[in-house]
Length: 205
Image (tube, rainbow, N blue to C red; front, side, top):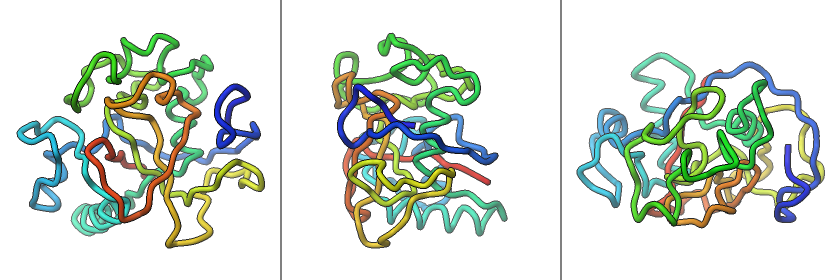
């Protein structure tokens, strides 16, 4: 996990043992959000198959709470380790820079081919058949933000140390240049913060 060539926040490279988990084939869409929450928070309106955005980490937690109550399942946000493992293609990884390829344009919506969110699943999937893990919208992870991987856990559980501190976002978005959408890149936002290019996908243990 991590990168030798990326930002300092992506270092040091370290080994992680990933336990079994499921992760969404697509980012959570506006349609699913409306079915559970009954509203439309997204900036890009009238696009049911686009990823929901303009939702905070706290909003995602509320959505998951209601979804679990309705379905009886145990959905959650992926940990950073789970997210990076899935984005990289899991055990089928080819160590690509982006999720599915070193050619981002065929696999992601980013600033050179987009000016808004797009319906999920329109670009090519990665080696696990998962879509939009580079670009389209940033995706919330469960973890608290840490400025680098020093002292990071060697398992795939979320690295949580302060419930009120920033949370991790991954994947880059339609509004970012290609380098930001690398699999290993990471950034952070306050758990109450929301923006027109931040959404999420679900995980399940």
